[in-house]
Length: 194
Image 1 (cartoon, rainbow, N blue to C red):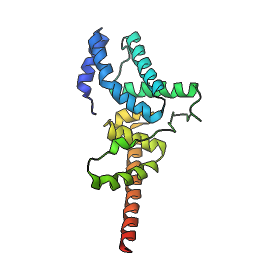
Image 2: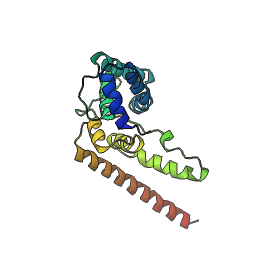
Image 3: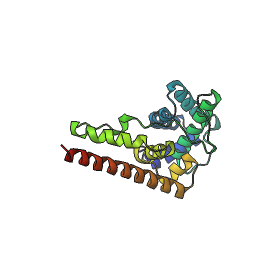
């Protein structure tokens, strides 16, 4: 779901001026996307929900004092930081990489569900290809293509610079293309023997 950042900016400014309804609207607009993103990082749905609530409680307490450029990037980055910190506190994450690379990031099948039966094989091939990506590549594919975030927002969330985010997307797509091409060639080779 692409969220309208212009409307979000208006809501953010109204919230900063004390409008409770704008705060509630921001919460409603972002809760499900933050929840889905959090579930890619942790299977502990209660922890994901708690971290979302903590994020919005903290925002309410500080009355949105933070000067931000992108509400989406701010919320996703802040949420990711809270969730990764909570996971590391309770010892559910192995090693924590310095730049907070999430090692358990998963892309679910639901992202690529297609209604037609003839596309089932394609979906399985894409899933297999996605599983071969590194955790960081999976995360950037999710943020850029599923969440439809800009490169600026992705770079903010993942704590990398703008060019690094563009390069990582390019590399991820290139890896997927190579894997899918190899699968296609192999399929054609196998079919030619039958």
